[in-house]
Amino acid sequence: MMTRRVFLGMAGVAGAGLWLGVPGLAQAAVSRETKVMLGTFVDVSVAGVSSMQASDALGLAFAEASRLERVFSRHDGGTPVSELNRAGRLRAAPAELVRVVNRSLFYGALTGGSFDVTVQPVIDLFRAHRNPSGELTLDDSELRAARALVGRRGLQVSGADLSFARSGMGITLDGIAKGYIADRVSAVLTSAGVKNHLVNAGGDIMASGHKSPGVPWRVAVQSPTGPTYAGELSLSGKAIATSGSYEIYYDASRRHHHLINPASGFSPAVGSVSVVAGTAMEADTLATALSILPPTDALKLVQGLPGRECCILSPDGCIYTSPGWASFA
Image 1 (cartoon, one colour):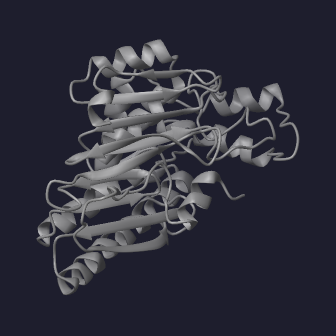
Image 2 (cartoon, rainbow, N blue to C red):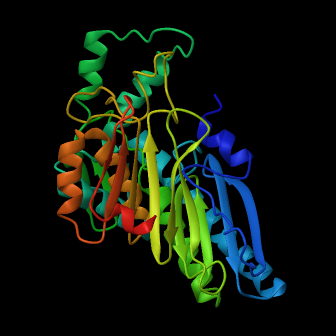
């Protein structure tokens, strides 16, 4: 199924946003490359360097993304995540996987359990019964069994070893790994001497430096109701990520989608949530977690986290923003 995020990626937008020029201002040369990775599109733009340096840096950036894809993908049967889900235990896990799992547990506690990577059994159930042209019907006993396998406290970390407390558990790192990869690609570009760059890993965006002297990167936030944009932001040294029910869904009404409330096993009624944070990994996890919460609770959580801002677009057209969101417009 081609989601709006994939469609926009194919059109050169790639997910939650895109970089935009500022009309009337001369722009420095920007080198840009897009590849299909991580089950989506990864788009990297670099500015302010020679074409040779840009080419070398882009090669290093995509090599890092490819390396990490072989760690985090749950669709490739040979990855560590797939092995963990299959066997219920993974010894001597890669350092990156242990780091991301530990951060997932941290954000799970920070958000009161709204972020939980162990919802994979419920996603598997939705996928098994998906009916994109009609209604998704679930057996109550099946849903109860899947929900019984959800719970971040059942994901255990002992040094470099990962395991599940109960047979049948599984994890999905879709709400955190792409953000982590965007951060790592950004770090590789910076190490290569390319400070000015924009990394878009399927809608998880890290903006560093400027597009041209005095001109920040511009990012457009996608509307959940159509192929339009709900606003534009200027970013430098910040990340943004967007989660929404329009991305992946399993029935015609889009009542069941890839965002799962860990407590209920059902998908929340949400349009989209965009979060600005210092890292793409944090923006990614918070956008997912805030999608589970009622808007008032989501805003309260963000206001208690200095340096983070959010914009919530509800299915009924209401817009909720944290106090500092407007500073990026």
